[in-house]
Amino acid sequence: MNRRKFIKKAAVATAGSMVIPTILPSSAVFAQTGSPMAGHVVYVMFAGGVRQQESVLQRYLTDSQGLQGSVYEGNVMYNILNGQAPQQKIVYGTDPAQGLAGSQPLPPILSQSIQTLGTLFPEGTAAGVGHYSGLVTLLTGSSLVNQGLRQRPIHPTIFEYARKHLNYKASDVWFVGNGIGNSTPLLNYSINENYGAKYGANFLAPSVVFGRDGDDHIRNAKAYHPEEELGPVYEMEDFLNKSFDLQSDNILGVENTIEEKHDIKEFKRQMFLKKDAGTIAYPPVNDINDMQIIGYACEVLKWFKPKILVVNMNDVDGCHSNFTGYLRALHRCDHAVGHLWNYIQTNIPEMAGDTFMMVTPEHGRNSMPNTILDENDWLAYDHSDENSTRIFNSIVGPGVDQNLVVGSENNQVGDITDGVLTIAEVLGIKNEVLSQGYVSGRAMSLFDRI
Figure 1 (cartoon, rainbow, N blue to C red):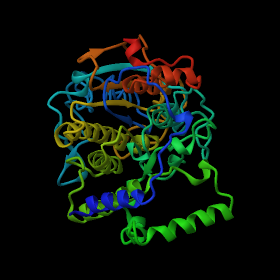
Figure 2: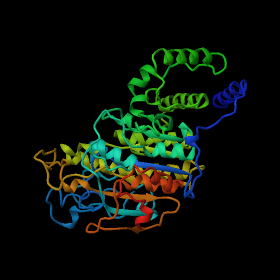
Figure 3: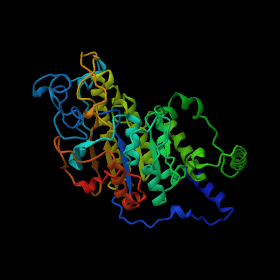
């Protein structure tokens, strides 16, 4: 019997020693009004500030650096978008003789782009130009843009809507973050009194958990036997909670069942083993943090088969001071998303053909550059003007029209607040989410915008 099966049987046996009927809180029991379109959702926050001109508009260097001619235009995101790569000034690829920099673009992973396989909304609108407030909007569907750092979202997240209205357990919903900076770990649930931590998602920052800190503090952590050793541990936990009045859900955080806790511990143990063996499901090229984060997101998907997984990317944020590095990161993030979709279809049979994926930046970047030059004497870009409110949306999976483009550069269709209602429709709870009254009045499901 393998360790995972033993843990499951032991936990069940422990629970069976005291037979108590499980009664869900009345607030968690709902009659679902919609029909689900897919059993699983993957939401890619293609974050860090992605400029329209270099992404969906495929202008590469003609708009940003003033180089004239079609040879300086082209598509550096050919796993997500249709279009040919640039012909000149290729700096975003690899070159064994030069390390990360080079003129050899990464080979495409997908034989057909996500645009061909799904629907692209090339011109949408962001709620603001801040990273954290943009991420909050992506997860809540609220256009509140003055959300500060070190604050949890005020309105419920898609994790909470799904768990409350579909009775998902904690390990059914995951947020894989690019790190623990910029308050990213606070995005897995809100402070809303009707939702909160009891409906939150499990948060994982792979670069921390499986990085140097994890090696020092987690790798060799003791795994307690569920029957013989955990009883006293939980008794002490309960005593300390009562002694320090830590009964608030928002203080205690997301609660997993005993079985879920053991499954998560075993997952982490296996990841350290796979890391040592060099078998983490990384994209073929994984020389930046976002690509490695996607690798661990694939592992979470394969292990837990969650109903919802959100993954946050951020490496393109280097555009503030290094445009060349921004192009490289943009190209690699596309590579990572292509790998993510391909991995689901080819390595997770339980999710293949039953997974909806949405890819959306949190905001764009300025139309005019700042004064910082990089190693190629190319100007960099910040995010503060109207051009920074331009974003795209890409969706693929069951129920999504293939090879459809909705809107254009001169015809904006879609809003950053649409993500929550779109996912809610895929899961069959759009009416439930709308009835709560927290999403923006301008939000719509992208299916309703077609």
